[in-house]
Every structure is written in structure tokens, then in C-alpha cells.
Length: 274
Image 1: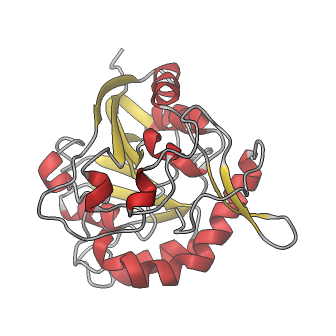
Image 2: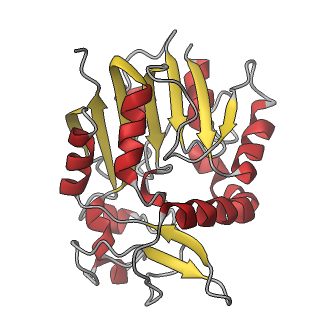
Image 3: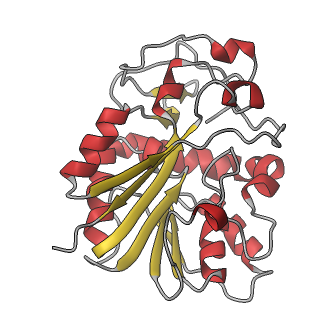
């Protein structure tokens, strides 16, 4: 999310096409600046990449929420510059990274120059995955795609469709309770400003009124219903705690806020075998 505190620039419903177009252009435009500021944090500059689930630095290396990835077909949705897909490849997975932004994917191509094996990349939106049914053993997303699409229920259904029976779908996103607070790492970010139950998306517009950035809010209950309706089994919701040895701020995240409430929610799901 942008560092601009949540403002009155809130519109009504924003459809899928508008959301996807806004995300594509925003990330294309901001990709260079984003990586100058956050590239090291997300592991873009690390040979072989890194898989970090959120600003708390909760790593898949330790968490193993995806299980054994070696020799598995893995799709990362909303891969950005693909540090997670690169890490998966370094662990023996056959990973593919998908993102809507060519600007972000171009950073992935540059980063992969230092890796022994490149990751195939696909430019596409998350609501219409360009893959056949039951193509993957694992589908994942680390702070990518889920809050940026208007129809996240369709995204869940698409993840379920491309999974093989028994496969895992694990995704992280802003913790839904964060919607109530300003995007401020300091004391102002501890005061409730909005209703948790408001589904009005946050959006920014240009001088012509065109939507240039959008994030959609869903409650925990909404997410659970989306997952179950897609025919998936929700096995866990992980809320990483802020580590004692992490004193850095990253956007809206900070040790101050992290000590009071979670910033990240990780949903761990599985497609039934039968």
C-alpha cells in the first residue's frame, strides 16, 4: 500500500477491469522506486531470492507452510519481482511466477541474472489464470494479488481449479483488522479510524478522475467463506508476531504497531483429494 494515509478519496464499488488496469499501471510506474526502497528487504537482491511472508520477516525457510517443495510444480500469484519464485526454484521446485505488471517482472528478469536457473514468468491477472485445470501441486502468494483484485472469491476459485487434488494454496495479505487504522507506523496508527466491516475499497485517482490505485478489503469471515466456497479446506490462519530483534520500520509496519496487533495474516488451505 502507498505511504499516503487513508484519505477521503474513497469511491464505491470498483470492478475487476478497473482494478486490474489500475494495479498494472501503478506497479509499472512505481516498480523502480519500490525496489530502490524495498528491494533488499524483500530479497530481490539476494542470489537465489528469498521467501518472506510479510514485514515481520517470517520466512518460508523456517515456517515451511508450503511443505516440501522439491520436485513440485508451484505457481506464485502476484510474484512481483519474483524473489519467492526464485527461492522456490533454488529449493528444487518447478516454479512459475505470475504478475500483472511488466515493470515488476522486468526487475525479476534482472535479478535472475545472478541465479543458476531462471524462473518462467507470465504476465496475467489473477482472476483469470492462464493454466489448465490441476496443473500445480502448490499455489502461493506473498502479499501479492489478493487485496488488489475486485473479485477475490474468483481468485480463490481459480487457485483451487489449477491445484491438483491434495495440493496447497497458501497466501499472505494485510491482516484484515489493519483496515481500521491509518497507514502510519507511529502513534497515529494505533487509533481506530474506520469500521472493520466497511468493504468500500481504498482508491486513488488522477486529475481526470481515473482510478490509479486500489485495494479491496475483506474481513476474516469473508476470506473464510471465499476459501470454503471454492471447495478448499482452511487448515490454519497464521498471524506472525513482531520479532524482538526487528527494529526497522517498513511502510506502515513498525515495532510499535507490531507489539499491539498483527500486520499479516497467512491463510493455509488445501484442495481435498476426493
